Image (cartoon, rainbow, N blue to C red):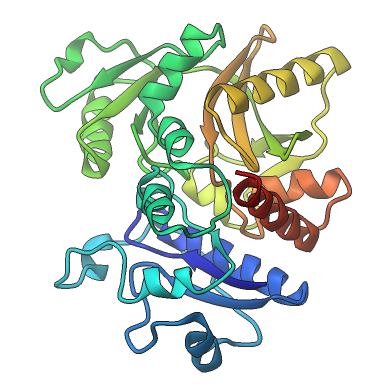
Length: 341
């Protein structure tokens, strides 16, 4: 196949996306595909067709190392307000499949998926409706409650909210960001003010969740299969941006050491969330378990990370699926989604 791996973009998760995209592109090339890695924000100014772009810009190996801090998007912005760079649509129209290695922003909130549907472009992962539902934490949590799925109690905070009424300790997080960007655990009022101010930099709507103390897990889904559970044990603090993507800062145990009954319950709940949100091809559902053994769904990810430190590839490996095989399976399942319409 001719495959465009679309990464980067003007998103707070840009660095993660570029790392994911590099790994995916290398895997797909090793699988025998013709692959072009393209930054959706930069585009390619001098090419309008995959064949031409591939001949000019394909390389033997891609590599991108994630910095410790999230990117400064203001420094990256150009004069144009376009989030999709030059010739991106034309190049994607002229290939067989677009592998979405995007995280956050238009790549994960359904906007790009809707645009590709208009142009008849095949892409990996879920459609625009389920992408939107999963990305918006407020909506997805409301749906979980409606369907009887336990999630941490929360309230929506805007810049006008009286924060003196917020119960602490709590977890502060932007409503539609991922990779734990802007997420902080707060214990007192002074810290709350600072954390809310920081979280509001990523959007007007912020979620304040009750703090669940206990163990953290993640469950991947590939096709109709629920993958082995992974437990996340940061050496310091919680599973934030730095602990997620800097090697050696978090111990990750796959499969997680849990009683069989609890393993089955968590996997069943993950599958329930996946179906409830209408996700397809692959996803990842994150959990907290308190000291009493109660499970809480934290969120669902429609485009899980595919970096060297990412969770889904580790879960797939525990199920006997190599990284290259995982990428190939995502392409095949996504192609079937479009050809079977």
